[in-house]
Image (cartoon, rainbow over all chains, first blue to last red; front, side):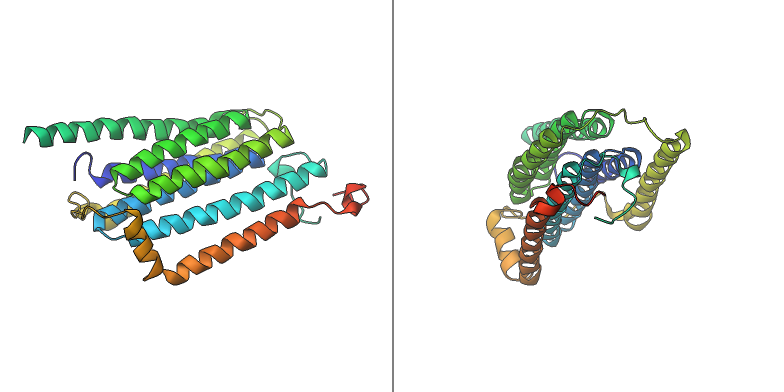
Length: 102
Length: 185
């Protein structure tokens, strides 16, 4: 395998997951929380594809594609909720969204 | 021999560019105060991740990443951000200071945990990867796996996407009653 060995790729994947977790915990705007969730999912995807290459086994890539489909579904539902909140004139702040009653 | 070492240097150079673009744009997504800039940084993040996937000989996943993520999903994100017209907020604004410190500590703890677990469980045999065949990661390879070994996962993924689409339609459609503002949140 040319170039860096897979430890470097795993380091990038772990760092991406950590940055995404920081965004989810720190930011208050639900749009940026969703974007940070995407970063976390992509960190996990990078780890899956890295191990798929390492073990010469395609199952990791299949799992990564399934994760991408789940991420797309999550974005659809999350953005739908953001639009619904905006229509009700609710401020976009996760700390103030403490009740689920519509 | 010379050709092999030139290839090695080239792969290292591409890897360093892609990895630093990936990490930098990831930090940028979290630290921009304007969500629009965050979404643009995430597009850069997804593009550089696709380069890393190509280096790992996952061609089909890299193409799907660019088409599905950087194309479709992020366009929807940008439309919604333009629609709701969000206010700007600094990453450290709002809430008491101990919340921000706790968030940083929790994220750092997660990162350390990931590194320790991977190092303890797989640290010994990460240095030498298997060699892969030329068709590894090509569309036909992925398609064969999807339609033989992972047929159930394939079908369930389509159901998940269908349910999400129906949920998006239900969340997005407005009823007359809530439009008139009869039921406040």
